[in-house]
Image 1 (tube, helix red, strand yellow):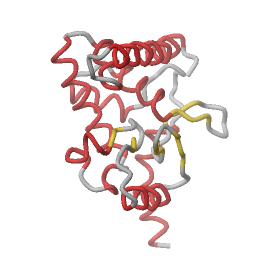
Image 2 (image 1 turned 90 degrees about the horizontal axis):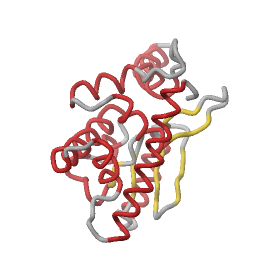
Image 3 (image 1 turned 45 degrees about the vertical axis):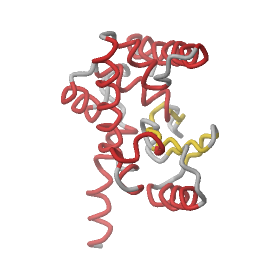
Image 4 (image 1 turned 30 degrees about the vertical axis):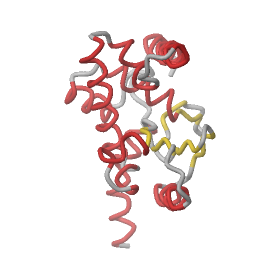
Length: 185
């Protein structure tokens, strides 16, 4: 009984982040709002990135970010639990695969390993969001425009292909933001 109660206490914030049905359909969950405020990012941008990166249709029909998402070599994989995702992540990294995007915000292990810390910590939703927020604010400081920073979050390079990828990504995130404004998410 004690173990179950402890597990529920530990999972409650995660459940709030990923599956909360807000009073208004277009409301950004409080976990995202808090981190966005902390990093001075518009909360709808942070949440729209999470929807783009790890969005999943839940059994109740809602489309929400899924914290146990990995993207290995361009193939998204979703797991039921943090532990299941972590075990697979350990296996991939052990095989030498480092181009892996991790968690709610799909932060890349190869480029941001130092910020992410351990593989287990990389899957912790609030930590994953903070690392993403740090990356996004860094891109904003360079570009002085939130939508350009969003594109650079995904593809920061200056080559023609990278710029095209950034633009395509920026449009996808903008669609999520627009649907939040309309209350369809």
